[in-house]
Image (tube, rainbow, N blue to C red; front, side):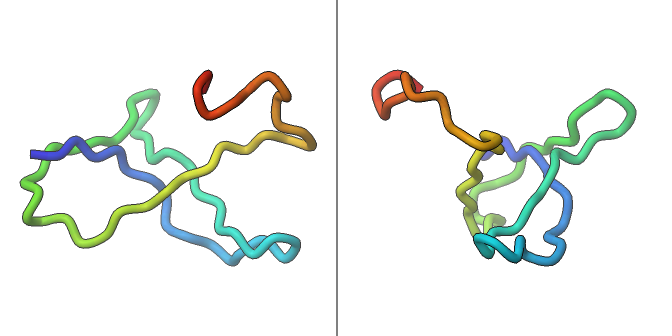
Length: 64
């Protein structure tokens, strides 16, 4: 089984960096999520946080 948190569909990519922006799908204040069988998965997706102008300098691969 896999726990899935749902996000909004892709819109147009950002013209500066070409990445797509998504947001969590919610119903009221509740995040939309599902538990599905792994055999039903089609794709995985890597999501990056929106840092703003600069990512915190004290972050590293071992501290985040």
